[in-house]
Image 1 (cartoon, rainbow, N blue to C red):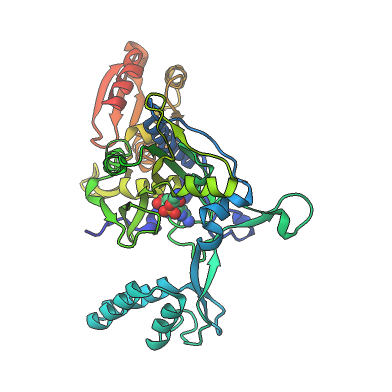
Image 2 (tube, rainbow, N blue to C red):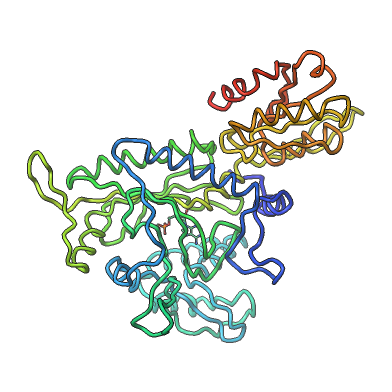
Amino acid sequence: MASPTTLDAILSLCKRKGFVYQSSEIYGGLNGAWDFGPLGVELLRNIKDAWWKEMTYRPDIVGIDSSILMHPRVWEASGHLQQFSDPMIDNKTSKARHRADTLIEEYANRLRAKGKTDQATRVESALHAAASNEELHAIIVSNAIPDPISGTTDWTEVRNFNLMFKTYVGPVEDVSNTVYLRPETAQGIGIAQIGKSFRNEINTKNFLFRTREFEQMEMQFFVKPGTEVEWFDYWRQARWDWLVNHIGIDPTHLHRKPHEKLAHYAAAAEDIEYLFPFGWGEIEGIHSRTDFDLGKHQEFSGKKLEYVDTVTKDRYTPFVIETAIGATRTFLAVLCDAYAEEEMPTVDGGSETRTVMRLKPSLAPVTAAVLPLVNKDGMPEAADAIMRNLQRSIRVEYDTSGAIGRRYRRQDEVGTPFCVTIDGQTITDSTVTLRERDSMQQTRIHADALTEEIGRRLNG
Ligand code: GAP
């Protein structure tokens, strides 16, 4: 099922409304880096808070915040230094660098779009079977796959390009001082952790989907060897349920993708994919990683990382079930899922388009907008008192500019679930109207009951 939302519509709303801006915009921008504006930070924070509560408000998980810069041996032990790379190929004419597998995949997609299904299937099968850079190169050459920019086929060999950003500790830039910005939060061996990760991605694309700086929410759950299958199943279900029930993603826009090729240390792995406007893309991975990470860190550090059961006195290196989700990528999925354009009748019998962000109310950057109908007759003063009262427990925006209908539309567009309107009647009997974003229904309630009523609807 194709999603009707386009990425361009999301991008332009994000920029217009202050969710996300291009990094270093006045200098022409920096690829793969984005700034979160006033509404964006609130939404991102609400997603992270929902994850933190889900993962750490339970007796068997705690959180930590490990440093971004770590001893370089960490990345040797984890295998990132040797293996965390993409196969890259350069076109000698355009000087453009591409991921070799993506180049082949996109070529097969173009063949399929032209109705050359057999040839597309042959190319895809060759890609799935390819086990080395030489084989990827052979597919590109034998199919004369052209560079999308220059149209030529003068390619270099396929080479591995490590995705870790390198820097130096101290003033001397030499090998002994090299450190890496972490490419995942996991190797701090967290338990539960939220934080920035960095990958020198070759192709940053699709807005927040693949960026060079991003945030992850990862958790390692340590289990007794022999119980990993049961815990893997538990976490695949728990993570799906969280996305649906706490983040509000439509389950028909999600699917599970078990890994066909497992890493040598992995016992099982499954991705949860979301149907973005550009197609299915991973948002979370659930991995049963055996004792690979702890085993490697024991070997490289020389320190024991064993668990001793206080009752049975059993001693073992725990197995790990990891859940790894991108906070910024989930933010994009949330926006895509919430965005809707709908036709609405106007008072003069015509119709207009209402853009509405159907965010789960608990995630919305602004919970309620307080709107005095006119800027006189005691309404601003009454509205101000109501706003001060509400903002003790929720995030409130105050808006006095323009016709009330336009103000509702502005709030709909950024996903504000409730609008509180102060009118002439408020001055006489202290009642207000409470408008609900999705149904647009308005109910009249006493101003003193607002906090409780909004709280009830938020948790309902
Ligand atoms: N510790 C395991 C790990 O990092 P991963 O599949 O490489 O696994 C986990 O990353 C999640 O992090 C992905 O599902 C995605 O949501 C997010 N992620 C990874 N690379 C990203 C990038 N370049 N930009 C945005 N999010 C990314």
